[in-house]
Amino acid sequence: MSHTFFKSKNILITGGTGSFGQAFARKLLTEDECNKVIIMSRDEWKQWEMKKSDPIFNHSKIRYFLGDVRDSKRLERAFNEVHFIVHAAALKQVPAAEYNPSEFVLTNVIGGMNVADAAIDCGVEKVIFLSTDKAVNPINLYGATKLCADKLVVAANAYVGARGYPKFSVVRYGNVSGSRGSIVPLWRSMIAQGAKSLPLTDERMTRFWITLEQAVEFVENRFQDMCGEEIFVPKSPSIHLTDLAKAIAPDYPHEYIGIRPGEKLHESLVSIEDARHTIEREDYFLILPEKVLDEPKKYKMFLEKQKGQLLPEGFAYTSDTNKDWLNVEQIREVIKE
Image (tube, rainbow, N blue to C red; front, top):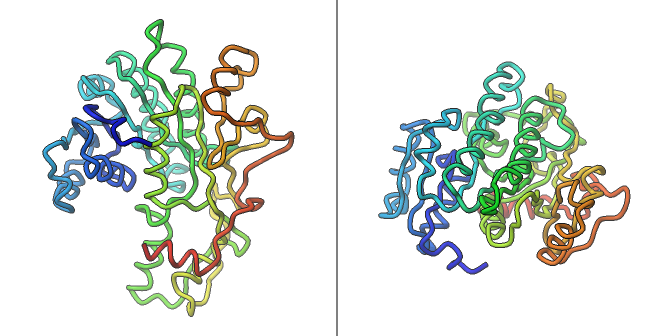
């Protein structure tokens, strides 16, 4: 996409001190087209660490804004004069969600609703929510809260009124290589501390795999072509978790500990039910709101804008039936970067 798309725009990132937030901010500041990048998060220590971690985060265009997505009044203050928002703030740890369900609901569901309401009230132009493969046919509370957030943001488009904005869309992807709290830094930390084996849940387990840079590029591009109401799903390779372990530590034995509560053997990014109203493009899938199939004018608008074809009956985009796979050497190159 043209980097000038962000020229003179103010862009706010909720959860901006996280892995994605920092990477997205770095890209915007490096391109140096936007007017302002606002990092919103609730932890002043992480903001201080981010500021000290790289000279780019001392850029004259960056702002650090303390606030919680649970606080609707604070969001209204934060979104003043903001053009684009990336909503990346979320609680994500699956075991923590099972033990603290109310906290996840307050941040991921109520917080998402607050973001949408404040964006409408403040006249923001475009909002992209970040979702996850865990939101597809969820079996854990984290996935269920993200599914609720997906539904909320798609529905928010109906409340913008005659002015036609903000436009709300969702980007959904799988595991991000090397992101904070993911398996790669965990295993590397264990190796550094002298572990003699690597714990794996099940030798059959597969996951979608995307790099942080690919996720950032994908989200940035979607701001340009979003119509509102869509869920964008990038096409990503799959990996076997056993191959990931071999790529990190080829000589280490594997200790199988069993699937944890709320965990799947394989993940989905487009379910069979979603596929009935999904368009396939060269490098991503576009899940349309289901009701659009009964609205010929809006359906035509999506097809003209996105230029794709509906998927065949019975299609599902899952990590175990994916046609694109990374082998051990390819995984090793990705995690090296």
